[in-house]
Image (cartoon, rainbow, N blue to C red; front, side, top):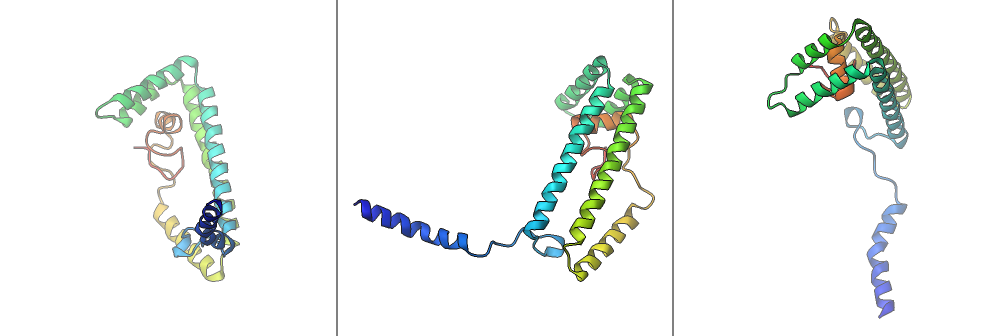
Length: 188
């Protein structure tokens, strides 16, 4: 009886063992449907890790720039947004603008600009590293795509509200309106 169970288990796992020894499946589709290599996937994970660390650092700096009373006011605004049947992030940003001191507003805008600049560096480094793993044809397609995207952004270097302290606080500390400043989301 014990031998038949062992034999059944061996037969059941034999296909799995054979698959584990075969060539790994291609990664998820990347640029133009071409599968990503393990090195490219690892590089993308590293970029995400660096970007997340930058977001955490920015959040900490922004919280530190606010007085305890103003952090409480921000929390109250977030609570109102979360519980509202019809949240109005623009009005919430305006109420935060009214609460923050001029020094806090300046700090918030400066911190967001630093994050935007640092994120730009991270993304440029990632693009260069990724491009070095591509074929000449893939690099040409990537360059054409980037040129097309730059043309679309012409005249719109920053998303709406990117310089508004209240909107920056909403996005950075509360996640209202999309990712942090200068990221791919638009505030409102």
